[in-house]
Image (cartoon, rainbow, N blue to C red; front, side):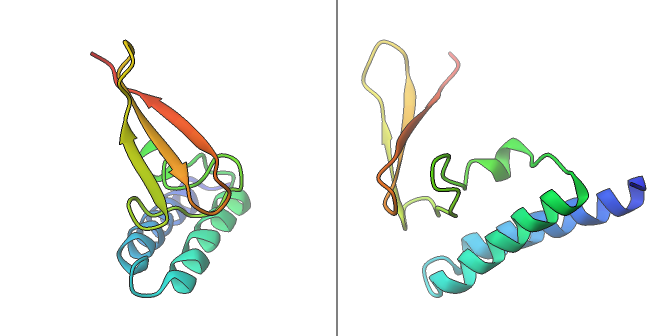
Length: 100
C-alpha cells in the first residue's frame, strides 16, 4: 500500500474519531456510525490505530465509548495508580495504569 494512501486514511480516521466524540452527547447513533467507519478504514488500509484513538473503543464489545457519556471513568485507589474505565453497553471494566 502506498504511504500517501495510508497517511490520508490516518487523517480521515482522526477526523472521524474527533467528530464522533463531539457528537456523542447530541447524536449517539451518528457517533457510533462514525467510529465504525473509522474502524473499517483501519482494517481496509491495515493501519494500527494510535493509542489516543484506541482508548475510545471498548476492548470487549469493540463499540465506541465516549468518556463520561456511555462509560464511567474512575481513579483506582490501590498501591498501583490506575484509571478504571467501565463500558455502559457491555459492563466490561478495564484499567489503564498511570506511570509515576
